[in-house]
Length: 417
Ligand code: UD1
Picture (cartoon, rainbow, N blue to C red):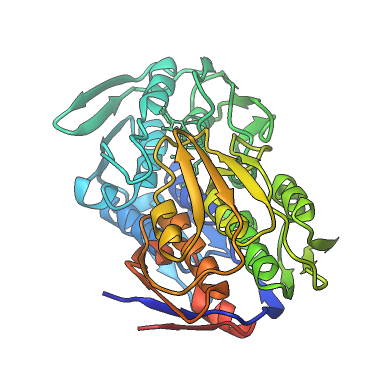
């Protein structure tokens, strides 16, 4: 199994390009199933989760063409199956995003239930509730969500809680429903705005994406089209934290600072000097010591749960103590024990972690437990004395494109074994 070895102690300096957003590209690739012509998706990050999504689409019969720049062309005209099998869905929960498109376009969908996941139980009841509201018959049988509807009918859908995936799934389904659909208590993440832009380019009629109320006027058909994926705000945030922790100066290019307010504010609170200019963000620590910051994760535009582990790593070496409150996922502190192996002072009580900054961390072998947890261990490794070896890095490859190459280009001593 591959490992990453990081030798700590080098302040990062230089410029790095932000990739397309993992959480935007996954639903967008699935949206290709809604059309009756090919959809060309640009700025696609080369990630394991993207490859898994492509396998799911190919399994359904879609024609997939990748060019040298990893632009993905999806031809939905050859789709023959409406079954997304367990073997694929279990490796990536986001496969459930084919449910809405298949149901809306082909009148039927069978998608394996994703099952457990390291960071919590993560049910899909809101996805099912939304499809039922649009008139689908849905049963859960033999481990599959089986949904059927001749033609979906527009409706008012009020989500019980804010869910990114459920908002995306129901939004996609509603584009081809008869009449108007109103999604209330919708998620407002930038990735939803990006999906809506892609759907609109395909001919969908959508208003309000990026707010809690999205209105969709259903259309008879969606043509294909072209879309370039929005910048990854989580990858960008991770690199900024790396720069801050190592006391460096790093410029991100091809970023979208307007999607990162909560994270940028917290970095400023921590003592970083930040400058945003168009799609560039420069962080400079100017020789200052980091101050610990308090964080409460919540749906966008509040602080993203996908940046929680990275900020915990930052608090570990900051001056003072930070209180980290995780409100989205019930089991998202698995990185705590690994950070403690590096010498961090963290106490967990329920959904809250109290992190007291220490002067130094010391390198050790650690284990990645989920995607963002892995990132936090790389960050800690960048400042720990000596070598940190991170095992099970396949988690990292699900969501970070070329992370060692990008960090090396900034001067980090990092290699893959
Ligand atoms: C997406 C992101 C993930 C991020 C998360 C929260 C993708 C591919 N993944 O995941 O990186 O951490 O948003 O920002 O975009 N819930 C239910 N019932 C449902 C759906 C969700 O109870 O039907 C709960 C979940 O258990 C969780 C919360 O709602 O506690 C938020 O989950 P959700 O926003 O749906 O996350 P994902 O879309 O799975």
